[in-house]
Length: 127
Image (cartoon, rainbow, N blue to C red; front, side, top):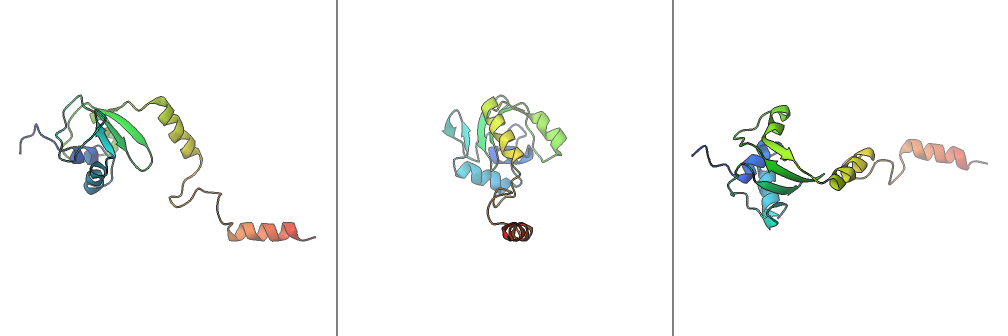
């Protein structure tokens, strides 16, 4: 394999936008990765200067490739291989979501009351 060619799914995994390479490939298959407003396939070759729109579970990224990364490295090194050019309004939306702690299944402090909440309600309702 030539060192000049790098698959898109492997690149997205290496820069740590996805936990696994198969998740990166699935994102490409499910039209969550775009290049020039067109859906990008997992087998697409990545070049320095390319810009991609990537929708992950938590954030909508717009990244510019600044270097090719062939294997997964720690986060502090991985961020040197792309430039985050995500629009400001998307960053504000993500900050607002982060302010409300997200457990994965439901928003914290919403939904069914906990046992402690029930006890507090029972004491409040007694006359």
